[in-house]
Length: 69
Image (cartoon, rainbow, N blue to C red; front, top):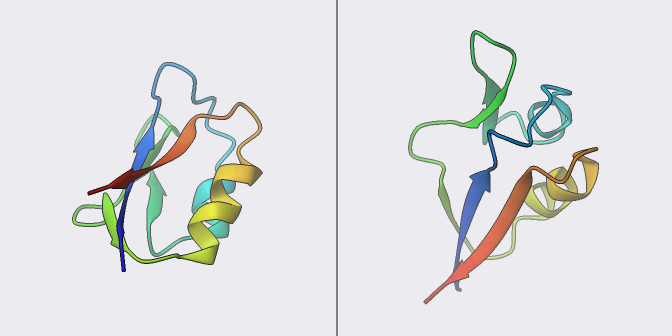
């Protein structure tokens, strides 16, 4: 299984919270309402269907997945 890095572009995030609603075991919202990746969850092993759905659910495309070698 390959690893996938999860990132949130804080400059683009508007705090809609769709990622946190879609994958609450990976995402949360900070005190300002902006999304962030939970500690220890920036890298996930294998294909996690909720991560892909969180990327699609973000209305401003602030969430991204990057394959790691």
